[in-house]
Length: 267
Image 1 (cartoon, rainbow, N blue to C red):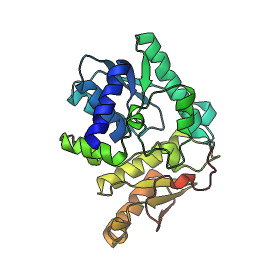
Image 2 (cartoon, helix red, strand yellow; image 1 turned 90 degrees about the vertical axis):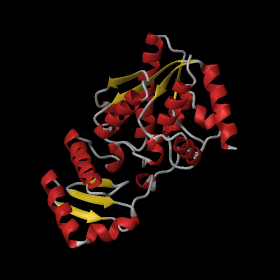
Image 3 (cartoon, rainbow, N blue to C red; image 1 turned 60 degrees about the vertical axis):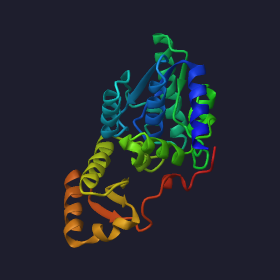
């Protein structure tokens, strides 16, 4: 079944022929870009947009991936859009509209026919207002069209020996900040530094959500015991306070994808 989906994806990509891949460095867009590159003869480029609210490690990993496989790649820098400065509930829609408009402009200027993205067949199950922007801008989503799910994509990457097959999902840093809160670059750097520290300490898939001067840590439940051991706990508290937090808490519900969307009605 997965092989048939991959064949359908290949057919779609060959028909598109000339396109920009919106390349975040995540599992889906990495698979899409690598697959398009492997088909040869297609006129493609991966483009990553760098903003203050995209984790720096994601930009680096995207660049490293493209270099490893010899894929044509560009990074475009974008300043913080004032329309999402106060983290509105529709920020994903507004942000996607801005980012993909930039990609469409880039595509037109460089002679590419389409912009495609890594939306997969599972991506309608969570709160994803960004999909509305993609539809309005007529962005192509070949993975979704081919019926490829996240598990399909991870399995195909593993079969091909591509190491990012089990890479955890990474959302933009705005998801760590409550809606209707003014976002400063200082807040973003605090969150990013705290998460990088916890990742370095062996906590995969961790999120640090900021509530004023309080850090609310979400980690996988299997790591609760490690985090509350005296040595780890004291180091975490000390380091997060050095970063600028006054209080440090552990969310006993653990990491939940889309947890910041719970109180929001679907658009």
